[in-house]
Image 1 (tube, rainbow, N blue to C red):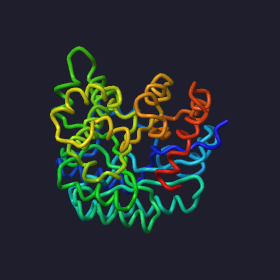
Image 2: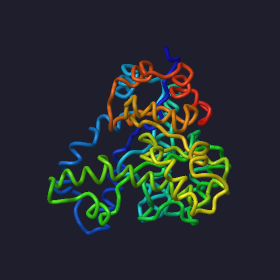
Image 3: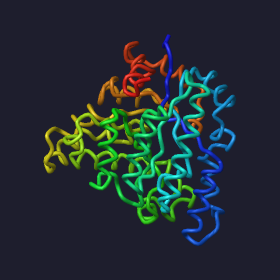
Image 4: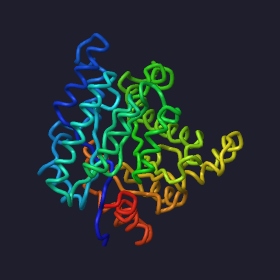
Length: 338
């Protein structure tokens, strides 16, 4: 029997903040806020109900109790203020979202923790907000979604955010997000399948995850961990495909880079991976074999995935009790200082 379960990729939104983000973005493109038919069809398949994602009260607690989850680490979900082009508005909304999250946690400190959302369009403001969120609000790090206006986070301009995280001793969770339209059209759309299938292929079906994994590899290739050896990054969905290619990356890409260590060495020491609700025992077994149980932290991706097997899946898995305890809560407690 596992002592406790802590899951760390669990989302919430705030209706008014998300509305302001959507309204601003809609004005930027000179359109209206209504989605087209394909977008509506996709959203109906992948998005949780507002009642599920906006609730940080009894509805969520009920799911946690029924699923054997003792604590969730919350992070902002869709329509995040992270990349709002109006920097003053982005700073305002990120601060408001982090304040609200801290208030939720204060109401149930034994059940919730959280990751900050950062206004990454202004790196200095993002660093200031990360420090405030950790030192004043008690949040346990930050979640960064996708790219910033098409720019990957290995660009030198973003380095201070990761440096600040290392100084504060908190991780950065790198989460997937929408990929550029040109890439989606080139790789994922075809006359051979329905348009909604192309939209899914480019997003939750595959594209988001490949893109996010590339973002992690770009950080490693940039030598960020030679400069910040104590920086910790979290990657969901079993590492966004990267663990399956560590050997090939070392053998091919690694010999072209000027790094102090092998790509796989950085990955196994500086990157933590989580399942994000993909409760597959074969993937669990593979992840342990590739990165080790010390680098895996549990997550359910609530409410994008609502699976009440959260605790039972891990309890019934054919892995050692020591590995189960590490993945279930010990690694999270150590990394996040819970």
